[in-house]
Image 1 (cartoon, one colour):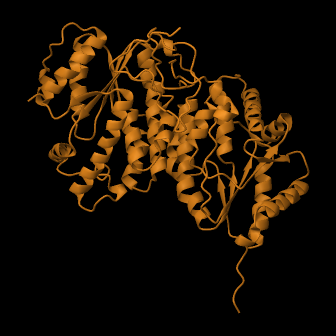
Image 2 (cartoon, each protein chain N blue to C red):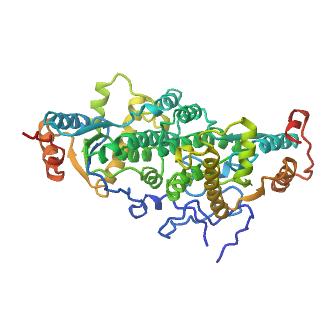
Image 3 (cartoon, rainbow over the protein chains, first blue to last red):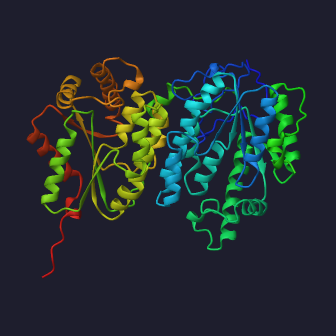
Length: 282
Length: 246
């Protein structure tokens, strides 16, 4: 008998993170492995050692997008909105682990690091946050807002020539998000925003380790276009909710709130930022 | 279609374990020793290294866990006991990647005979003993070149453990596998952990073509065997000192 599986627009339940390139799929598990009874596994593949998916009652909401896509602004606003609605929020992001966050900063400053080492340091940073901060939060029923997730890490390493199969293999033990938003902006717009923010363009944001161009603007555009290409592929694979990141802050925020509200069962989606965050809301 | 979560057990079957892919596009050669602590592997590799050094061969010796780049993170993680099986494994993989990309691979391309005290099989055995999936581990290290020879020094658990416990005042927390909660007694925990690692090593002997060495045999006899095997499998002339033109 065919088992019925509900389809979420935001999930690609039949897509494991890694489909082996030889076309053979690994043997499937016999039953649902999550605590929600909806047949969608909370992990892409073999779960992390020692984790019981049924204990995870919280929600993991991911906001992805390139540099200058407005992620951090939106996460600050969403945090305030969710807290005002009575939800406890935990956040995660790149290089924020206690274990190796500062070490990665040091590696980036030195430019001596090779691509594979950097990719693995980022994965260490990711799993340290996931295991020691995020999973406990989800066990306690919190809402986790992730400012970037495995998709950025996969995209950055993939454009540097590390195979997608390899990267998917590493991250298949990661937790599948409940919602993944992609704030899509053109590289030219991202350039304007990043330049306005810091009056310069950083070494890594413009992918200068890849020797794409000596012209910093060209290098930035080419690098961010490559990343965007990877995101387009990942979006098809994993059913991202694509949002036009070039819209106004309030419009992007309204669309994010609408999807999150329906997921969490929040009736009132009205929100106006407090005085503390008013500067983000033109 | 069923859910595509792979069966954990299926992942440990040999046919589903992805072989480490190697591109032999370099003139160098890689010789590795593996085995649990106290199996005698380091002594033997040292003697092999001395033999080659004295003969003037182009060699380089490398050890597991020695890259300065990620040393501070590893030390912090171990001191404060922050590491999970997954982050322990990833941090060591990052460390190895640094050594591989900046040391081992350039040397192999430069025509060196590289001697490695422990290699990726150490991670396969130790991290699997901590509960990481063998399938996941094989993928994690798939960027590493496959050795030309892997000498596997096998000593019975009691022999190996007594060698270590006698020579070391205190076993370290992770070294003894204390993070796994196997036993509150450090020596006992170490013993159980080493037993698990030994089992994982034994499972790799055939698939990974280990050259099995009896760790209880006499040191000089083992060394003689090792030199014979090396000369038989590797064209040592390639690494011999070049004769000066007269």
